Amino acid sequence: MAMLPNPLPQLATDPSGRSLGLQLPPGRLIDATIDGPWHEPLLWCADEPARPGDWSALLPARKAAGLHPVLIGSGGSAHKQQPDAWDLAPAMMSYPGDHDAEEVLEDFWEEYAADELADPEDHPDDSAWPGLAPATAPDLAPDDVAADIADALSAEDSWLSRPRLALVPARRSADIPAALGWTGPLNHENDVARLCSVLRSWEDRFGIRVVALTFDQLVVSVAGPPTTPDEAEAVAAEHFAFCPDNITQGSYADLREYAAKAVLDQPAWSFWWD
Image (cartoon, rainbow, N blue to C red; front, top):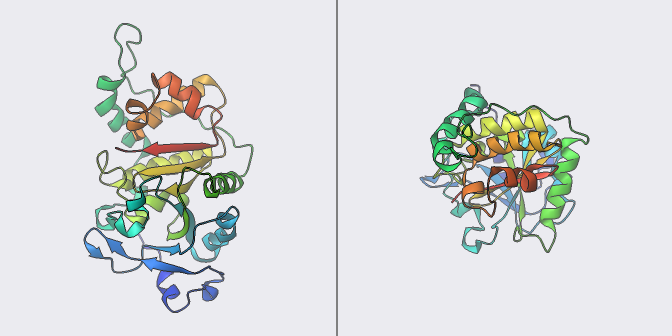
């Protein structure tokens, strides 16, 4: 895999990003990992909390410099507000394009579904991998939906406590977690690039964008969410394989209720790993 050039080091001598065609607010470069400083910055992060409209203002950085905007927040864990404390581990990550999304999901499904979902009396086939859900054509532009979700998360009453904008060098939005070396799903999967292959597939099929990250949470916007119960249940099966804790440790009675309440017609999907 050819490595992408990382433009972030230029911000050390050009904090405004003008040489990259940007106009950045005050911020800082972060290279802290679980093993010590990385050999180059992993992200740029703004000093002040984001406000509605700020995510959209940084979107041109994607085209100008290959830098993808994402909100960084604590989600209520104040001691994990700063990405320096996130135990980033880029050395543990492979390349998302080296993995097949369906193979990844099927592996996880086979590991968890038989114990967590199967009900031999009512649903004897629940433990069989159902395959990938069909794509849904977006009614809106994915970036427009992402901007709306980012604005909602940047509002003062958002659950995402005082989120700040960050820029991450990545090939596409779906690759942001692996590019950072994010370890939020560590108890589920150490190589987050495998999960990013699924995010790539969702980007292609449902127009998702990675909008926000906390120490252990991921939020994606969804331009083409499923619009029927059957479609939603198919996607919910993928969500279970991707993040079992959403269902097994959430407030949903079963996968069908999760599909109806958290997937069907929803413009954002959230994931949390214990």
